[in-house]
Image (tube, rainbow, N blue to C red; front, top):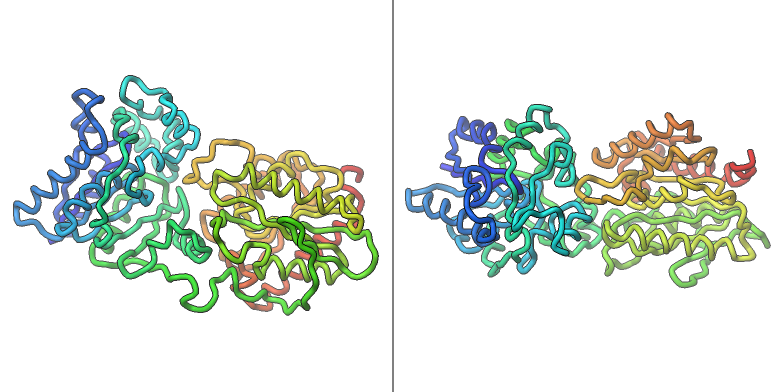
Length: 511
């Protein structure tokens, strides 16, 4: 028999598992829910004495009880903060645990406190500085409208949100501030991750980050790790209890998707050849920027290409050598406009500020080149570079003739925990005025990214923005190196033509 031991996240207790536990039990499994000290049914006692080790001991006690009673195949499920005591306990009872399930949770490491996994960046900083609205040694639970700071509430009914708020308990601060201690034994236990795509990345995006060489994610590659998706927010046990129970049962049986190692089937997708056979072209490399010039003396209009991300700091080659960006740059230069491709420092979701500085500096260098017409410039952003468009949309300069976007992320994903309102194109587009926008939309886009695109287009329509959508119905995210089809090639031609035509028009601020 499978024995599920369920550990809830911050501010919550065993009550959140009621419906999921009932479905698991109906399927023949045994279910135990852990009441963590200071939370839920065990909310009495001095909070000062409660830390992460207290909660590790709570989970250990349930594991030992199951083993003493003859047990079964123990599957430990940790939601949100709950994964920290789960891992701490599994590390000490690795031989007794058949599988660990990370339920919309991070990948905690030895020596790192749970505070590092708190999604809200500002709250992390406040807590690290000893603030955060704490009372004594406790962090008050969120108000009804404050749960989104801890994860997406997508899928929760009004009644479920009311119940979550009514039963929430203060979180002892020691549970968030005490570092997790692991010996390494837990690394041998099979793992399943359940990704809630209403709150963060799905499997496709995780694979993309693995392909780019993200070091923290390489541990997910291999037969020991499987993944599932649930199309809901951060509390699937409340929004999709039956579906969650089904996924947990499949996970216990060893099911799920396995990621592939970079390069196992040839080059990773972002390093495969560009879909057009574009002739080679010389480039001039200055600092972090490569310039491709067309024939003739100029000055030429220019297109500046801005890569997405986050890109691991040690990724090689760097984005300005990626086939998609060099392919577009050579193609545009062959059609009479200068092209620039730059590397910027978007290595984490907290880096948008310094990446924006890098882009602005590179744009000014390109505009200052005497072979470039600094009054006719287009900016073209890709993928996770989408949030960098917000500054340009909010206050378009007169020399900016067009802003283009390919399969962009146009609002921070909930799991990013970004509280800064600056990098939100879905809001900034209302101030774009007459700036022409060309948006290349992948028909097979990842749902979490597609939702931001649709939100952006709706906001653009309300504000009367000038948006041309180039659809690639059978195209995937990064279709230029993934989908070498006639439809994809036509989309590239259409998008480049649309941008170049707008470079030839008068300034949008004077029309």
